[in-house]
Image (tube, rainbow, N blue to C red; front, top):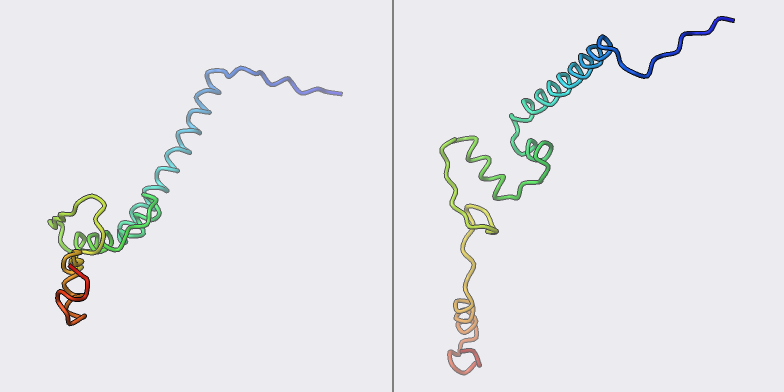
Length: 114
């Protein structure tokens, strides 16, 4: 019976180069696939944020993305953690709410509201 020669555990220089070229080819292929996916998603920025960046944009972010796609030189001024959209009306203050309650009540000073 004929036995096969044992495979050596060490890599020879020719083996190292072969393995290196395989790894490079796999890396290049993976980068090309990722680049193609990114280019396809660049047509729809909301999908780009969902799939590549990994978060769902809020409604005002979607509005701002749409404005930015239409006109690149759009500037948005918003404070951190601001709520609402770009076209939302301001919410009334406590003082304004009390004033409205008084007007609905019909009595200015007698309804118990200051």
